[in-house]
Length: 95
Length: 489
Image 1 (cartoon, chains in turn red, orange):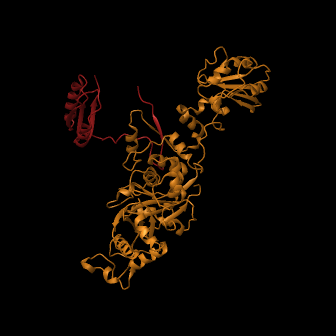
Image 2 (tube, helix red, strand yellow):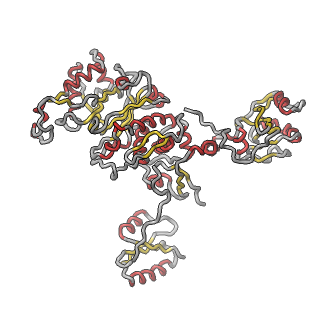
Image 3 (cartoon, one colour):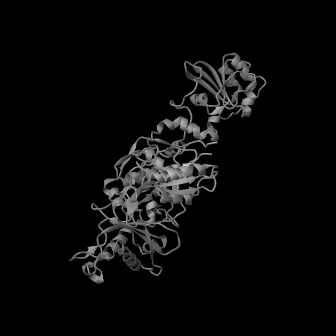
């Protein structure tokens, strides 16, 4: 069950948007480092192996990562590692 | 403070309107008096009465009851006690009986033998609108329309403290989530309207309403009774002569501190005794912090942006204390700054935080004054004069040395001024092998500009230690301390 939302009142001058937006997307993956995160669900590796081949063909550098288990949030260290090493990340959620 | 009223405001009625005419009874199952009067309710309904149940629509059994578990009717009717019997005519209430009072109920209902088997009288119970379990919801329902700040939803899976930190609303310490009920309870600490503009806050020159200040006071951890002090301090900090923008932007590390004067300090618990400049007292720790959060959040003054401090200092989180006016042998500092004795006020001043001064040996005022003057000379740099303002906090054991010798505040400050008239040969650039200093001074120069040294009495009963709180450039080229009376305290 999802916890109910908490409503708070904005303490600022309200000049910044209340909702946060997603980060900017790159135009092209050539020359960029793409992290492939396997969340440890069955056959996610099959999907990611194929993606790795396709990305490499297009000039991207691929780095592979895996969560210890899909049942828990990613370890903080792993998140920091991916942030430091990659420009883009693709997460395999498929069963 | 005004009472937090949760009932009977015009904006509150949101549900089904109560009948314009006739008798209305409001009950709840969880009330022995309501259980007692249950037998008479059926008779009243037969005669056209409307019965609302606050907690159980099946109570009383066998009686046609309107479900008021949402409490809309109870709020609209301003119910404080159950059972309440009302007579309404033309949409207005013309009579009310709270609890069971047989004679009154008979008179109101016109039923001469009503409740013949019941006792004459039994007091009622509190209305469910006053139940602490629904207090927040009731408060928001009654007064939520007074809040105009943007509402921000934190997702259910966001950790509350992390979410507020992520949005950049904190000084690096955790803050209290400013939920509408908390902000409404904070606003109950002032008689000022939520939409009143308190000040225009530097550096972005944003008007801060009482509501915005209250939101930041919640963030800081203030109690509602601190709010008048916070409001006065925000107003003082934003005064032109305080120059909060310059103080924020300077690479020097000083920041606004708040000195509280008068009876409000004791009433709300601002510490002026042991550890007055330290941690552990909620009012001291949160009032100064609230002021700094207003500058950060409303004014947009953030470290690394407009705040360019080279080093900063821990007092920038917020520094607040009170003068110990009751124990001090001297006239309060505030009186010398034009505040009538016994009146509550705040003085804001720029400070880099306290530095202790030891003198455990001096027993004469002359000797102790010289010790303190030497310590004060170090403010900013011992060879710069005049330059920065300062606050001297005299401990009880130190001020006693002066008081016992018959020195009053005026004599003490005059003696310090004389001792701090510094010879040009000591100040000159290059003197004492130090390149820093005054360029080619020709006359003795005062360490502090007139009114550039504030002296307050505070601290614990034991310890021959005072404290120097160095400031920043004083006067029109920098920041001047600002005192504001707290009108509502």
